[in-house]
Image (cartoon, rainbow, N blue to C red):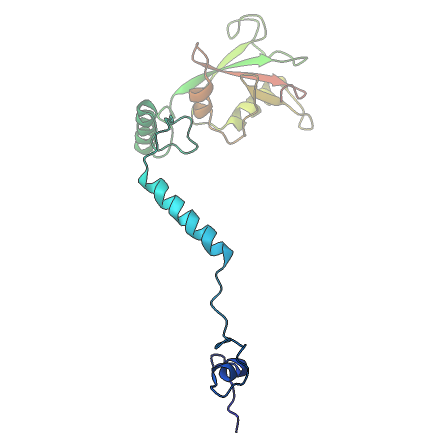
Length: 200
C-alpha cells in the first residue's frame, strides 16, 4: 500500500534512484535538486559588505550646515533669538512682547487709489503717505477695515493691501508680528493699498 506523500517526503524519482536494485547505472545516485543560489543573494551580500565598509571609513567631505538639507543645530545667534522670543511669548500669555504697544503703520496709495484723509497735513508728507499708530496685538483685518472706512469704499468693492509692496498678509496675521518682521529703517510697517490688484 502506497503512503501519501507529504510536502517534505522524497519524490518517487529520488526514492527509485536511491534503490540498489536500479538497473540504470547511467542515472545519478540522487535526483533531488541541489539548493539553488539566487543571483540577488550575491548582490545583497555585496551591498551589505559595501555598507559595512562605509560605516568603518570616516567621511572627509567638508560640508557646511547651510549646504546640508537638514541642519544638525541652529547657529548660535538664531538659537538665542528663538529662546528670547519664546521667553517673551510665555511671559505675556501667548501675546507678542509688544502687544500693548502701538506700532507705526505707513499707508501709501498705489495706482489710482485715492489718498487717505489727512495725507496733506500733519499725518503725512504731502505725497499721499499717511502714518497711523495701531496696537500690535490687532489682526491685520483691523488695518483693512480702517482703510475701507477711511476711503468710504462700498461693501461690494474690493480693497487690496500689501506689506512692503510685495505680499498680501492674511487677515488674521498679527500686526505686531508683521511689524517685527518687515519694518523699515524708520521703524514703521509700510502698507500699500489699491482698489485693484497691484502686486503678485
